[in-house]
Image (cartoon, rainbow, N blue to C red):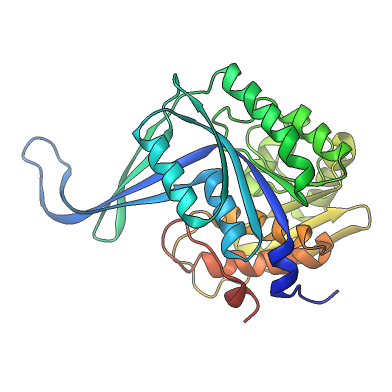
Length: 310
């Protein structure tokens, strides 16, 4: 199969489930050091808000030209309502559960002289009632989608992931996971899991050379019943391990400006292409190309169909 047409992608439906976040940026001028402490004083001139974390993954699916739905839990607070408004503006089908006891996760970055000076995180974990209602919605939504993408940012929104994976697999859906933490058994049975180098090392230990990486990754894949394991290796490209062995593609970035959100773009592209009917081995080089494009942009960015297939 060649590259999917715009029409094929427009029919592809991806359900993204995971931890939603609001990314806030305060941009300003730095002209002096504070008299109170040895820190720069930033005179804030511009505030910016963007869709972050798993919600940004859904946005990446959409900008590529596929249909995206997003399921997640937010607080009943100002950032939660702001995030919902931003999501609705994009055209993503939004299914947010509100937990009144939750602070919607916000990452606030203070930018001066075009560099990040400070990041502040506001967060806590959702309660079980909100997560249980998310499960019911998932059961209704999963059959209507071609691929299910779980984007785990470790904020507690995917406490029930094993039952969701089982449900999606029973419905015959491709399940793609961007993992967090060291316990990959909770992702057992996924079609493909996409750890980066550091994340995989936390789980299988370090390795010397490609042969040892492949042996360790294949062992993990077999143990947990993953259809495939895609390891993103930054400047060294990415390696896909599946039943047929392994395939590697070198990195494609022309210039690296900002790596924020590159993993989001890679898995979103993979999910959109798999939903459009592409086998993983054909989708991987395109996802790699998308990652190469997005690191040339500032902040959590996205890639369009035209950019990817130019």
